[in-house]
Amino acid sequence: MSLRSRGMKGPSADAPKRAYGAKSHGATTTPRPPKKSGGRKKRTQSRREGGSGWIWGTHACLAVLNNPRRTIHEVLITEAAQNRLDLPSGGAVPQVVDPQALDRLLPKSTVHQGIAVKAAPLEWQPLEVIADNAGEDGLILVLDQITDPHNVGAMLRLCSAFGVSALVMQTRKAPPLSGALAKVAVGCLETIPVCLETNIANTLQNLQRIGWQVTGLAGETDIELSDAFIPGVRQVIVMGAEGPGLRERVRKTCDRLARIPMRSGAVVGEAESLNVATAAGIALYEARRG
Image 1 (cartoon, helix red, strand yellow):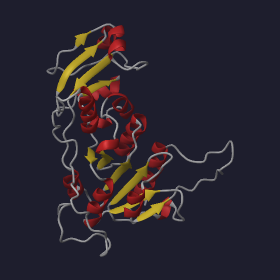
Image 2 (cartoon, helix red, strand yellow):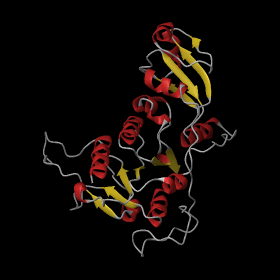
Image 3 (spheres, helix red, strand yellow):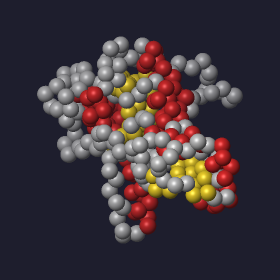
Image 4 (tube, helix red, strand yellow):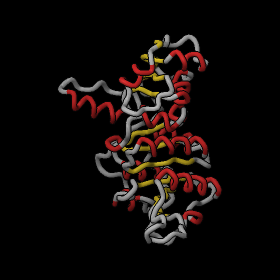
């Protein structure tokens, strides 16, 4: 049954109704061309859609080049990298350049490992289709305004390790699906569907209607993460940004909030919190263990 279906209830009969006028967006579907009314809007549109950008680093680039679903625009490679890498044949012809050319092209201090690929964004099925097709042990990770590409890239690796069906982010608060994110993800950007949604709270409500349980991570709750997940129920885990945490409406939409128990205290020299990617790894492990 689709996320848009109205006849099926979620885990609770009094689940909140979908907000009037809410629009459910799918994954990184065919991107709309940016408007021609100024460079600023063009850059914003590219970030929101994931963009057509450069990907660098050995693992990330090899994954892109071996992905038949990718449209490759350009491949730049140094002679040293060409000699050590086994590039797939039949695709875009690599252009051999000196390392300094890559240094000038890519952001400062980029560790490109001698190869960079420019590719069009991937196209994934809409989240509603992915959610419908997920098994009884389905797991979805939702990021509420997490914008650091290194954290998101690390969480893509976690999604691959724990069999997550989709990674969901907000369209206005998502890092470009290229560059540093792709390098940290070491190829997992090619295999984990990334769904960009306009409204995270509305998206969670739609998932709840078809039986997905939503657990948000927060420190101010008595429920420990190990007790939060119900076996045999498809699970959504929601992570908030470091510092602000979950936004108020997203927090209220969750079926429950859970915390990671920590032995450290709020004193100098002890950890007050965990990096968001580390916390996501613990949450995904607990969801699978339960």
